Length: 153
Image 1 (cartoon, rainbow, N blue to C red):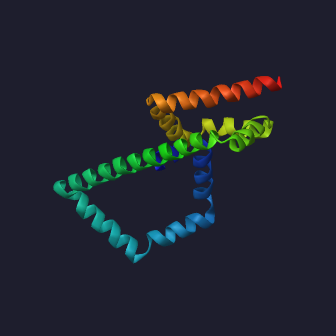
Image 2 (cartoon, one colour; image 1 turned 30 degrees about the vertical axis):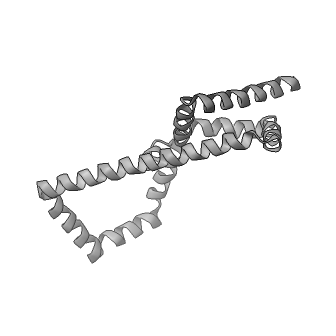
């Protein structure tokens, strides 16, 4: 998630603004001057100077990133499956159709789909489309929504 967040221009602009704040800079200077910070930095340098320890730490970090990505993929896949299952309920579908007719909701939805964090949901949907049963269900919902939107026009 951190990697996706770092691709978000709004989030990065907010982070830049925060880092330029004199109060934040004062707190960071205070932290950097602390004994604990200096000791931690020294230990980190010592560890990184040892090639075997550095390689071990790198392997651990790569493993943690992979586990994190897998967990995020699993969770977004579950969320998308839940959403598709919910859409098969007439009352949920009706509410979704009502929302899709609201221009402000559509605008928010369009903005969300451009957010780098949404890529996980796109990937989850692509994975769901590989399953013929899920694909048929998604296409059925999409067609019903199209029919509902066209009926309004």
